[in-house]
Image 1: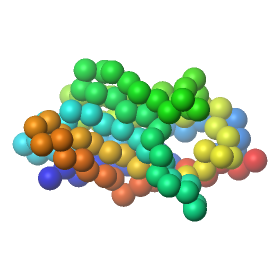
Image 2: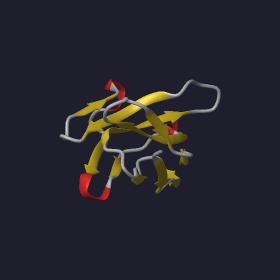
Image 3: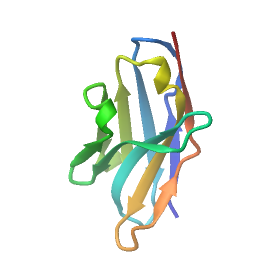
Image 4: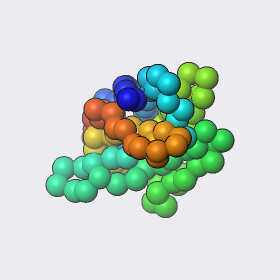
Length: 117
């Protein structure tokens, strides 16, 4: 079992920045990849960015250049730096972790990000 705890969400004005954190308690499991997804009201959950234990990253095309994912493997923590935020970035942001071996995925409880215009 992997437990993920997100933090760092909140209310910010358009053009501002936020940094989200996701701390993973993985026990005996080794985490292969971590990622961030988001879900806006009335919309499907969508990919924001992912990062492997080796540091390879993948971003949603529309977010490249504004969002940066990073990871501290020693602390089993992933970060999402969000700059130049727009009202359309308003959503619940979820952390995801995939473990080695089975490839099973786990989700955090989500953190609300609200960008005001």
